[in-house]
Image (tube, rainbow, N blue to C red):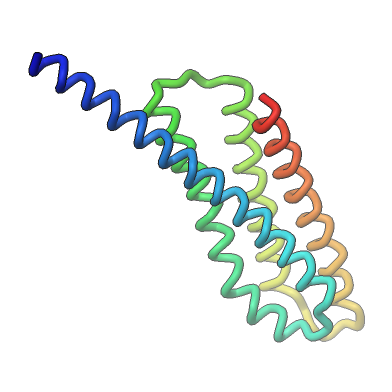
Amino acid sequence: MILFWGYYSKIRFMNEMYQLTLTIHFWGTAAMVFITLANLAHLRLSHDIRRYAKKMRMVMPLMGSLLFLMLFTGAVMMAAKHLDFTIANIVMIVFNIVMIVLESKRYARLKHLNLKPEGAFEGYKALATKLLLIELGGMTLIAAWMLLA
């Protein structure tokens, strides 16, 4: 009886851990979509590069932290349920890496933006808008795929 209770307790704990990480993963993804939309709106409404860059120095580390949260909670979910690598898992991992690269490119371009030439901020806006729309589109497609699966 004690052996059974210990086994049952372990299974219950694993299921609770899985549910918790699934909830964190869901809300982290929702936060990433919200922050990406806010970044896109802020980018389109900004006219002063210095104020925009100052605000982005606070927001970009938050986005990086959320990307790490997605990878970590996904790994915990896979470990808790002893899941295999499925196509969906591989696609999510690859997309997360792509998002890290896109965010790095966007931040590096902003950090090294030369303010002297006329229209430099407009050139950055075009690139950053394209990168943010790629991120948003990818997150939307993967979220729809996971909700329909």
